[in-house]
Structures are given as C-alpha cells and as structure tokens.
Amino acid sequence: MPGLKDALDQINALKPGEKLVYTHIAENHGISRTTLSRAHRGVQVPRHVDVFNNCKLNDQQEDDLVKYIEKLTARHLPPTRSMVQNFASRVAQGRVSESWVTRFLNCYSDRLTS
Image 1 (cartoon, helix red, strand yellow):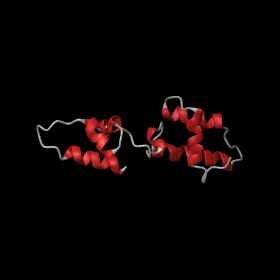
Image 2 (cartoon, helix red, strand yellow):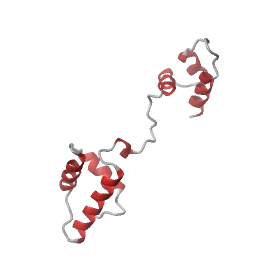
Image 3 (tube, one colour):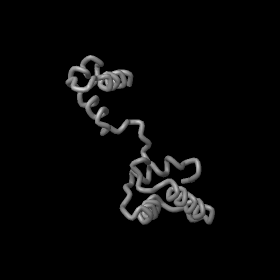
C-alpha cells in the first residue's frame, strides 16, 4: 500500500522532539489513522499472512500427518474428516476446528485424495 509506506516514511523522517500526529499524516496520505498507528507500532498483521501461520501444527507435524493419511489411504483405509480432526487434535494437544481441517485438506489436496 503506497500511501501507508509513504506515511511511515514521513513518520521516520520526523526530527527528535517533533510532534507526531497520526491523524494529520494519515489524512495527507489518504489512509486511516488507525491503520497508520497500528502499522507504526507494529501491531497490525498483514492480510496476506498464510492461514497456517496461525497454525496448530508446525511444518514437520503437518508433513507427518500427511504421510500418515497417505499410508492409511494406500491400505484402503482413508480417514474421514472427523478422523483427521482427531489425529490433528492429538498432535496439537488441543482441539482443531472443522475449518482447520478444511484448510489443511485444501492445502494438501495435491497429496491427499478424498
């Protein structure tokens, strides 16, 4: 977002002791004061963050789960969605949601068959 980048550059260019007014800078660059404030303080998460960054399993655990599902499928015992949810919940040591299972299956759709 060019307006946000330019506004942050303007904030960084302020001299010590110069007053920082998010509202004026945000209006000059056509962005929201709240967005500017959050971005400057580093508390705003970008929208393009991968859904698995908020994940219950790390990459190795996900890979192991995919391999386990592949092994079951090769033995003609493909797991149901609820089974995948239970497997993942055990590994994560906490309940994973049905939407997590959907995202997981979509993410690995090239390796997993339904």
